[in-house]
Length: 281
Image 1 (cartoon, rainbow, N blue to C red):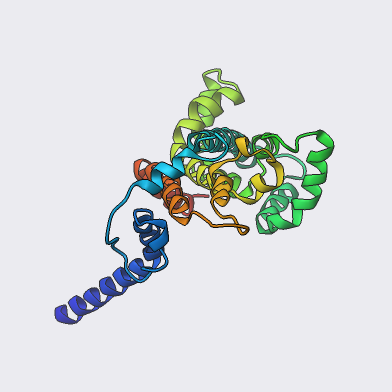
Image 2 (image 1 turned 45 degrees about the vertical axis):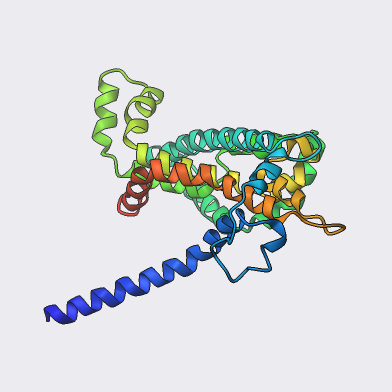
């Protein structure tokens, strides 16, 4: 029996390892190709290790376009992602607190509408949203990429935090009210510290989604100097002339660093937030 279990474990780990290699190979290929001369990237596509390492792609890519360095694009992405993430976490926590702790008319209908919004493809709303933002005069600015997230428009995070809050004993709320705390004080002093894993989980996902958001930036940002990284990368590809794939791979490799670092430093909260939210409520 022990031998069979050992064989099963070995087979399981081998299969998982092979599947992991398949999943990560395109990313590794992109990073290694960023150190190859642009002219040889596709000539040696089957070779993972560069014959000669070069940092020229990183130098050329960092120079950017039209006197706008790639550092500007990184700053734009960081501003958009950080602002939208703060709005998402704050508004989602407030909405989740209302769903989890208060009884009001139409609560079930509103909660069902929130769940329904999670199933609705974002592409369905693109045209009406664009027309609305155009009338508001927001097209061409960062407003459509930031402001809506301060109104809890992402049901996933509201649902995640609502489940987490529902698992917190109401006795804590009652004890705080007896001590003279208002609903706002209960939320800020009792609820928020206890749902830290859910807040961090929501913040990680929100930041990564906003950092990688290409379509929204393509719709609303019309000046190259205001491009985020996700949109600036396409400038390396020019169908009318030659494309600098080496520089594009180099900047794409750098662009994944923020998400990777955030995941590494907050992985503990991410795992705790996801696993616990599935058990509570």
